[in-house]
Length: 364
Image 1 (cartoon, rainbow, N blue to C red):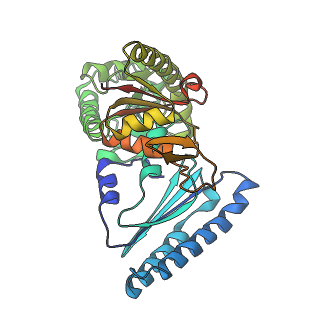
Image 2 (cartoon, rainbow, N blue to C red):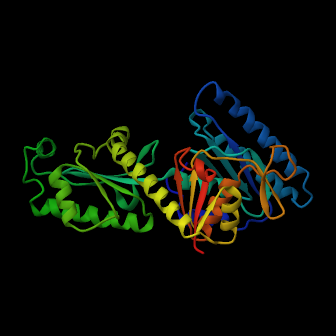
Image 3 (cartoon, helix red, strand yellow):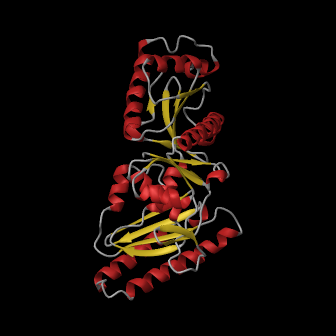
């Protein structure tokens, strides 16, 4: 999946298209032997989409052929050998996109005048992305990460580099033999530039921030002013050049500690809401609150999925083959909550077992 699903990108995906905008959604598998079924399932979904397009009298022949060509191109670009947990393919007249998701999704083909984005939005919200800034004397790099992976980012012109007068200065600084490295004006200006560019990144894409570097570098960066709220400083030098796995490993203990603290704070927030009678628990109550725009905060276990059907204005448990069964209601709730300005937090499986696996703090 693209590391950044920006608001601009999502708005483009949601805009109406000339009918039909085709969405193919299917679960995928990371490992053998389960991933052997993925190519077969994709071929079956493509055949289902072709049948739906061919049998729809509202689809002109020229448009149908164009969309089928777009689907073929998308399938050719799909890398199932490096699949994650879900795949979404969008195709419309003159365009196609392929998204790999770190979250399982239900299998379906949808023809509409807009793309089906709820699974994409929920997967992005569940990713819990963060930024890491790795600082060295001659290089400052930016890294986009989540609990599973980290990749280097080139947003706002990162990485920043400069030449050092002493060709051995970087090595000395990293091992602590050059305490004055961060005292000269050239070094301070170098970090000012990085600080300014990082602020631009955070303004357009706010995330938790981890800053990695030697103690003098971290101290100077702190002098330049605040960045993200609750920025975590990781005193670990030598990572401005990566590799990505090393940056991920350096950040992971701090990220895990922050995540555990967030779950504890969330539990207290839900208890307080229950005391104020501003609490909803279980998929039916939370769904109705989200639909009505009353949810201020929605919390959901990151592995929670269930099949339901709507009956009399409520959601009832259903089997996958029941008429009207809906198997991505959790993703729909997440998308609706975000659309109405609610905050969405994903927590580990079992953390909300007593609340029906999904809960909300209400506005009223």
